[in-house]
Image 1 (tube, one colour):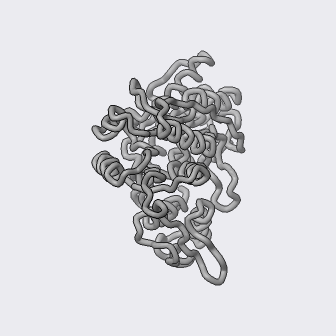
Image 2 (tube, one colour; image 1 turned 90 degrees about the vertical axis):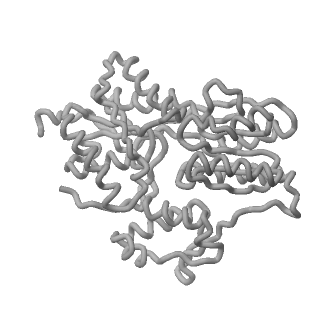
Image 3 (cartoon, helix red, strand yellow; image 1 turned 90 degrees about the horizontal axis):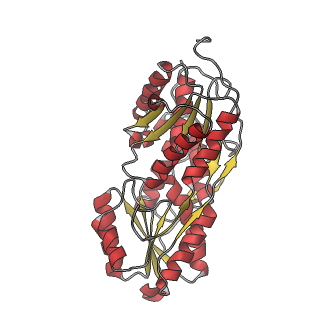
Length: 371
């Protein structure tokens, strides 16, 4: 049985939340690699990988002499001119939202705007954040919605009031609202074809309870279409929904319990030869489950996903994935918002994904006879 390991992303996520919450302020020194190793019960390399990821995101600077210093600061409007201020609202623990943030910041600053940040824990805090930034007098809002339909009353009020608003990464079905997002249907379809072309027919889709999250719903639709295109019958028992997805962000042994539950599912489904994960965190869970079962990836279990999962040491993709145009999404989002600020009606833009191949796909391995 494989040894349990705390993912560097768990440490990264906790440190990142402390930075955004103000627990660590600009100029503060973060724990050292050795201190993180002791606190989380991991290797020094894992702690270092978490700090390196924060540096890559631009939240900290690192040097052998000074250690790891927080450099991120919340930007406020200059000279109190809120007419040049854009509100950025996102869930507190969403890793992809932070990637979009960097792209949007650059485009906004080029246009002479600054950002006001609001982080949300649930629908209630999202509503309050919208109320607060409107009271301040921001020019417009960039919203990375929480999972779910996001038909909260404040979002609907923004739309009715024709307040400049752009949704990032998803859209609201049946609602005329500015949005920029990836073509998740065809992105999933294309990356799953990598498995099908390698000979896989028993492909498991791993997702979480979407609750109306259009990006995830569309990826599952892409899964269905890819199999249908190839003449593969849809087996609903091969769609695994992780109901406690949020626990994957937690430390051991909490996240490990989900890994072991999925491992048990795979043990009882030996016909499954490959996995499509609707995001990178679920792909990591699948890989940990494979290790728990002592299955080699990709020799005995192939894995593909949406969004890159980088090796913490080499910073290379662990899995073949459908890549989103993060920079383009951010730039387009600002462009759409500035159009609305100038008086134009809202519009939506859908951007294609690109399949990026890695060494995570091989021909199917028959676990039913090689168990």
